[in-house]
Length: 99
Image (tube, rainbow, N blue to C red; front, side, top):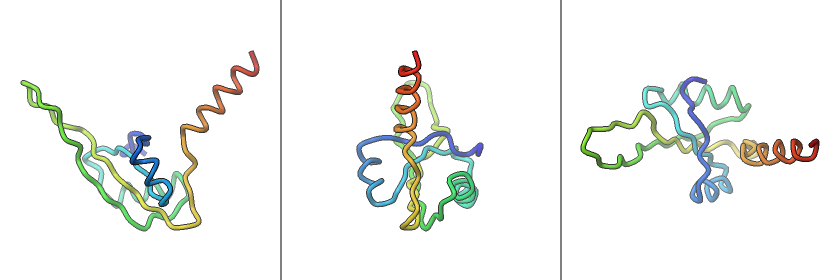
């Protein structure tokens, strides 16, 4: 899974999650078929649609290019990807509980 950098948790992403759509930042060199294969293999879901866009670059004096693009991935109804945020909260809660 070299192409997928991380999941994106924003307000728009939270709204999309209710529609069974998930947002990830991926490397710009990865193809759509590679990303689809990685998502299906890693999360065990069926991908039915993928949309991608490049985020706007903040203007600076030195030219700066983005090394990633944002993918909005729609998965088949009945499947879901557990939010990574909730698992982190549970992990921190269990660590605090043990100490």
